[in-house]
Amino acid sequence: MHNAAFTALGLNWRYLAFEVDPKNLRAAIEGARAMNFAGLNLTVPHKLLAVEMVDELDVSAKKWGAVNTIRFEGRNNDGEWLPLSQFAPASADGPFEIRTHGFNTDADAIVAALREDLKMEVHGAKVLLLGAGGVGRTTALKLASENVAELFLFNRTRAKAQNLAKEVKKHFPDVRVSVALPKSAVNVVVNATSLGLKADDPSPLDSKNFSMKQARAVYDMIYRPAETALLKAAKKSGCKTANGLGMLLHQGAKAFEIWTGKRAPLEIMRVALEKNIYGH
Image (cartoon, rainbow, N blue to C red):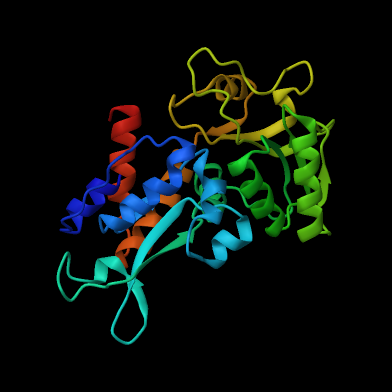
């Protein structure tokens, strides 16, 4: 996605993947700073840890309490902090001081993906959210900020869902929040758990406790495999379905713009993603 975008815009940039143990995250961020990286993306389980490791938090990271994008910035002669991409690489005129600036591009991406892929607005909707981890927490807070009519939180560890419900109520007291599975119909089920990443993973929802016929639509944040057990069951029950490709696209496009200062070529990025995930 990013490399296709860099090529399209004629940028001599490269996006690479690195596996980093959580205990080495701070050292990895510092290493990237020392090597004049333009930026980083962070995925599970680093998003919450990084909040305490960056020099500056954007309002998005403060609001949602997680960092999935870091931009490296240098201070110019006027004392202004600018993206490192605006300085000549490895030159004597480059910045002598570099800071890390943390952002969150996940929250807006989930709403954009639901709108684009399922043609739904979350305002006034009843939502069942599966998972109360890092991305589940960000999603719950974002959905509450969009004034959902009711938010049902379901997590394997009930205490975690209860803690998240308290946090949502603290910030958005007017939103109805429950930690029980809904008995009536919901507009959408959103899966923010990792159940489904492996081919033999069961659905995160037991049909004995919740029938898919209660949901109009199902959104699974997992995008590989393209169709999880949850989405297969949802499709069989006649629900509208979508996987996490749209969310991945929109959070990536926003990160691209944060690093480069240029408008992301969204359709080029979408085609690259679809080719990688679906093979066409």
